[in-house]
Image (cartoon, rainbow, N blue to C red; front, side, top):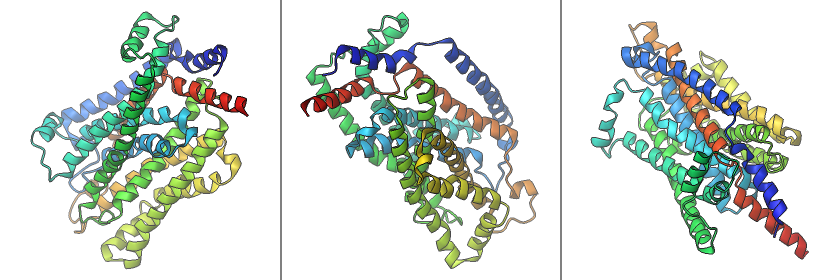
Length: 440
């Protein structure tokens, strides 16, 4: 067993940051001001209508739907890290599992609001629940997003309970904060019965979240694949979306774990080894996604029907070619090549690569949505140019940025109020390592 000094050191290292300080107030104030500006843009849209956006009759899905698909994709990382790797017995994920769940909660909870921003009459949102029809994939989407968010919150909260029991006894915290921790710890005594109950609950949730997570992005892909439009009319949309989701999610974990490691001095717990293994995971999921990208364009390119030829021309050497090749090269192919070289799997290079991958993932969703809508099966004739060609407006960009700011605010709040590295599990694992070394 670790001695008390070692345990106290771990607790001190992993919980000191939960104290609310001036820097956190300044950061949240800055984000709040930025969010206020974005909300003002949405108020303008709400008052005047969706005509203030670049969307028209033909391109009725724009940045908002691209953003929604991106948010749902990034949220799947909680399932990948906690469930798939956790159930396979990968102990190295312990320091980053909670970070993955924080990201999952942030993106999944804001995804629903992104859909509201795309509605011309958000006051009728309740009708989706009152008059929703099982035949509609939109109802399925709402159901799985809500369920996934709930399960992600539980997967974040239940492993957190032992840490909350530790935090409630911290005399340096304000009384209101200690009271919250005391309430959330639900009388945790660390008894064998409580430990067994928590482990069983976590195991059940980890098993449940896998089909739920697969459903959330598969159902989202069905919203596209159920239409005969060129670029969406494909049988691989489900696994294609899921593979892309893992790429976006792992990139998000890389970025957040680097930032939190830096500002909370967690170098002893989130080590170079964790970045190296996360980089290898990113290579794996990127290779799978690259395979589906090849399928997405090779099959229609081989058949080369007229409508598909127009669509591919727009992507490969037309209006979207610059963005398309930038996304493929800098957001997928080049990161795979670089991460095969060990020095690029160090924290700082991996952080930079993660930014490129995540940004590329967002623009990839833009390329999935916009070019297809600009090339319907029937040609657009005798219409103004702004009906045929989609260009995002300042209002759209501001509202989209608002949703991203909300994600950052949720991540910042959860990472500040709660230990980002599990305290109780870290003590247990280090204790087991110490015991094994002693026995040797």
